[in-house]
Length: 261
Image 1 (cartoon, rainbow, N blue to C red):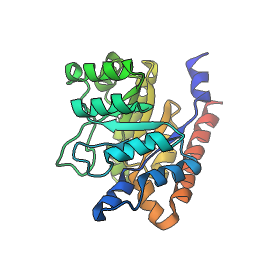
Image 2 (cartoon, rainbow, N blue to C red):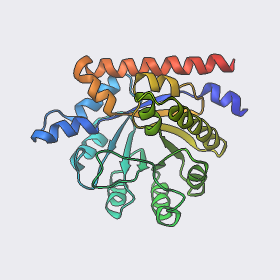
Image 3 (cartoon, one colour):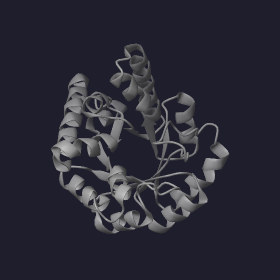
């Protein structure tokens, strides 16, 4: 099968991140709202998987959330985690479908940028190796520079997730030149990653419009979206919001398919 025909047949999956359901719960304590219930609603509405970031400080998702997600949902769980011994032990014990290694700082509100895979090859290699050996699909959350993508391939991870936050921010601020520069970097990064045999995901800051646009890149196999969906669900309902996002992604992918025919 040629690369071009492979791209034409690639589906576009939606992973819904339920971290900020847990953020709302933790603001007051107790059990409501329940991120596991949110995950089930998202799946029923069309999500292909669930993402949850178990941070060192447990500011949103907690250990029992991960255990319940593994036990109660019928779609793949993507565990976002820092490259620490504690998180590696949790991943090896729980065996999620996938583990996405992300940078993590206590002072940040959210993940501020991509992992420096190029500069941390020696530190990351044992984590990737142990996750691979356990049958856990490994992705690294990086920006779209060639050297970072090439480093992910050298580490023998299966997936690269491109951090698209700078592009989304430039779009939201009306910064056309900056947005175009970031878009070209994403396009080139997705193409290179696909050529290196990596599955390509994207996430961070996506809304309906930017998700529809990035869905036109045929190399992209999955979008992981959380904050926007949870925020919009306050007004529209979670099921409806997931369905609206699914429709936006489908429109973008249909444009990509049409342009390749």
